[in-house]
Image 1: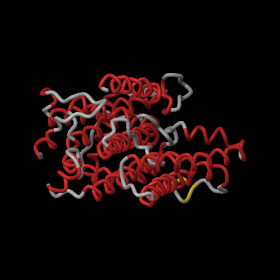
Image 2: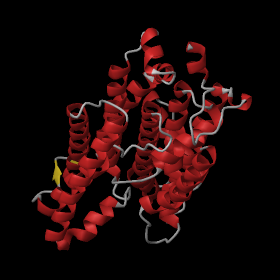
Image 3: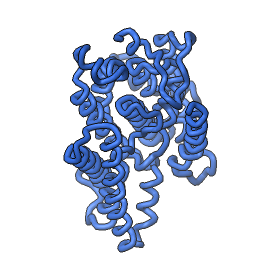
Length: 364
């Protein structure tokens, strides 16, 4: 049984079956890492002010190697360097972190609920974050606490509150996983969304800013946002990576998993909490960016099969690359204006979601 769970050869409804071509996890992982690096470089190259690729690389290397006493010539000029280091680089890195966090959270939710259509906003994280951000935008007299914006803090707290309420409601109603917990998440999300709508209707002057946040935004990214989200995402993603093999064992069934030394209830709670922390961290600094956690795990599954031990790290890297590329499209498609990044991911994700439904219908 252990071999079956770890190999990832079992397929779920709506998922592609694994094939021998997908049995090169090291090569796929390296390729995913290379794709992320190329996407990041493209993200700092492309923009209203063109930056020479070679000069960008030279500037970055000079910054990295400068503390070691190594100077790299051929970098950018003063203005161009400021654009790179203060505007584009934090935005691109934040997009990579958010995309990776949402993707790995989506893969974890799909694994723990055994549902290929699960996504990171399943348990009320999006509704909680939306309510927290809306309340602050509408009523807060200050915009920041020190270098940290107050909207991200409120969104983070709201997302954790939404997931916490769903977990408590699920536990009270007798279900710590499965359909009961999903229904609890739906109920909590509906209640919090109603509260958000009430606040919006009473504060119509702030609707533009509220909707701008709800549609996803990375244009105001700063280094403080990167530093704020990094520890939370790092801890959450690290925990999920360590749970990958246990999730593979859990896929064979609770009774079999228990006989192999895995505690199903504890594992589910740990995975849900870690995935929710990653989701809350991501939406706190980016707003609500949909479909990343749904689409990316399915793309990764095409390369590595259904084994969570392989799927989670590949989803992390592909998710980062995916959102960086989506952000490039958002910046250039209607330049000099910007398209909300959530609109770009929805244009990609909605047809993909419809395709999953169609594939699932064919397998029934």
